[in-house]
Length: 295
Image (cartoon, rainbow, N blue to C red; front, side, top):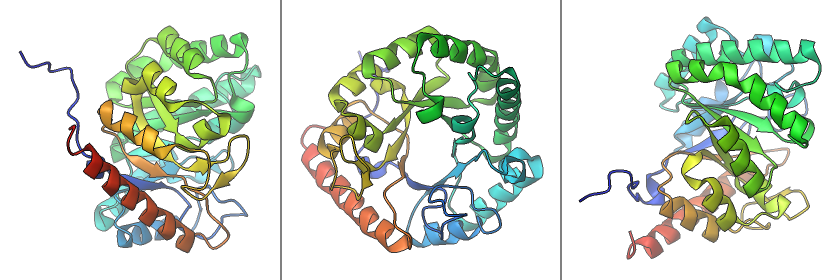
């Protein structure tokens, strides 16, 4: 009997590759990762010229009202540009919630953040968004049991909306594998999934084998970057990320989501991205060849 629950082990090269918004453009107000108001449209043509499939949109805290994601007309504009360029928007990195956590102990902040998330979920259907990433790091980290309880309470009212809109809420957290697994079990929803960040994992010194064993089937979005353990981001292949081990798990667990490049950039941005994209594609090709005998 065929086990229909076993994922099909497709080659890594079959995965779509995208870039997080802003990586291919001049910095916006001195920031490498941001929604560049006034020239965000330019990135689609550049991404298409590089053969990228996707742009992961960003919802910033600053000027969030001016982000096209926050209006139906803006989302229609995103969809039109996506269709014209062939570069689509399927995921949103909601950095807004790093500055204004859903689980803030300030009731005003938490209430406004809940309203922003509800509108984002509602508008996302216009574009066809499949995943919204909620960063739970830095000031939004779930560092205490109390903060985790507040987060679960804040998240629960959205589960029916996510199901109705067919959208996943991806959690990106600095929790260790066992703690993160426990959090997911407490939430207990197929619509709450995992954003796996290769660089953050390396920077925190986590073991990819333990991470994938804890929640591999729940990963629906992967950020590709490299970091030195306990240190900064660096170019792909120059840090502590064990990409060979990571991609073996990605293959073996049948991951079918995208690879979103959040790789290191400098002030110029584009050329260093091209170099790292070439590196990533070459690595994927080599791993696919080595996987050929076991797929």
